[in-house]
Length: 365
Image (cartoon, rainbow, N blue to C red):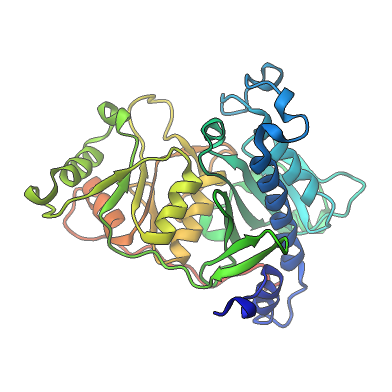
């Protein structure tokens, strides 16, 4: 697509909405507000310690605070969370929000109208990499609020958000690296937008992203290898054996420790990412969060022809049981994820295909 003819995010959303003539247009406004939050966070991240007030902010926990996950809240975590809330609480499209950084769901202030959607987000994934100038990002997911919330306008509660990933209607991530990109799915494939700093607009640069089904790259934190379950150890050992091993080819290992950056690399050129369940802490079913990380990334990957799994079952079929539930996560090039699933299931068959799920979108009312 010639540069002069590239669509902005606004035009892309308008064209998507036209597929559903009866749509109210709420998705356009909501996603544009989310994109505005991502632009604001991109600017804060880009300025780093040069930003107003940030150079004086502590690098230790803010006010001694840890988030609900027991993780240090860095200044940019707090700022990014505030940006997401303020940019989206007033628009009248949301019934409530939930964030990795907050213990409880965020209510829409009484001064603003309430809508029919729920916004779930990780405002700054990989923030521990800020200090070393490695790419970080934001992840978000949009769900439809339960009908009784829409009808009554009551405050949202935790159970309203406990919907399997298959019920997501839109999801995306922004990556703040050498360029800022927004990767988005509204249930009709995946599109990538690059922030044009001259226009201040996200411009469509990757109109139909597809993850290659085969790969020779994998990403895993090998320092945890002593805690891995046998299927994961088997898979990694076979990759490391290279041409002389059972796979008959060499593999490269990557590890950035920023899931948005890992997902973006896989989206651009293929690969498989593993943060599996292990026995390091038997009380935890995994390291990553189901609602804020695994489900939105799973939705995007599935829409791009990839596969997302717990290792044992399709990620988008998991029924959440708590707002901050952790889970094991494997995603990426379809053939490799299916192999990992076979090893977990100890079976020679490939298992049932993960459904691509019926086309759905917030455009459809």
